[in-house]
Length: 130
Image (cartoon, rainbow, N blue to C red):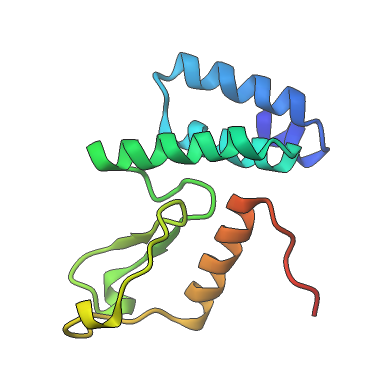
């Protein structure tokens, strides 16, 4: 129901539905991520960032599912990686090239575009105009 509310621009109702889903599901990560998105869409940047912090903390403690809004699944057979992986857009970090020792796989242009779209979604930004 929350996604339907988001689709029609009823952010308050969507947020209320997601908050209830989080309470009832023992803070399911998918609901937490979707709440962060709804908060960003509603313009509540601080609360959206708080949801990101919750997801980041949770990921330090264990698994965060690939199907959170904005995340991109990277299949091992297409990427050359040793196992299926997830581009987790809520955990962006800068890495010095000197830390990288060897190429272990690759991603397609479509996957890069999906990560960029996930970042825009997560941050509540509009897609660039063409």
